[in-house]
Length: 116
Length: 109
Image (tube, rainbow over all chains, first blue to last red; front, side):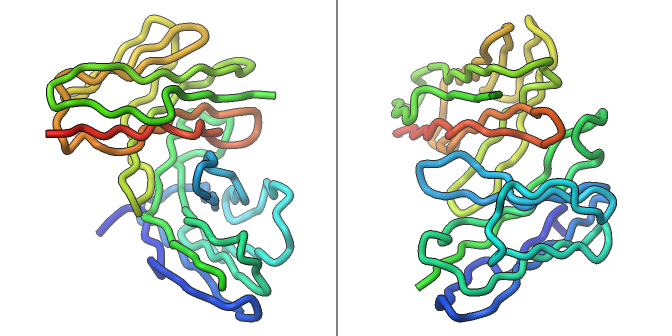
């Protein structure tokens, strides 16, 4: 079983839909992250969770709502998205939160989201 | 503001033709420079972490080096299976990795 699992792999939704992305890590890590990857742009950090607590929100629009019920699971709830939100959404985890000793990120395969 | 810049944006090589990818960075107090490989439709896969100038790490046909301002990913005698996007990243302040845009490598048989 892979270290970080994301579902679904692909998602097509209309602008009025509500959907959720799911991420689960099997590595025993303490920090989890959501990144957005758009064409021709670097990965953009969206949210950071340390020990289930949100510590970073990089000015992400409220139509993206994260949830971290425990240190192994992370969700991204989506509603009333725009076509420019179409992108690859990547979940990642790390043993330690930023500024600690081990900051290496492990990524899932991502959810390719298309907003029509 | 901390930044990571990668060049070239894309690189096309013949099989066996060695080359290097560049990653230049500006960050206060480097806590590591990370290289990842990303295949189409997949998440980035960790390759190396370098912590201090002069450090080198190798994995198969890849060798990463680090100076005070940049890192190089050297690819020796590449094969088609080395085709991927190579990403460079650094931790920055209280946030995790800040990534460059990547170099898209194509190795032609």
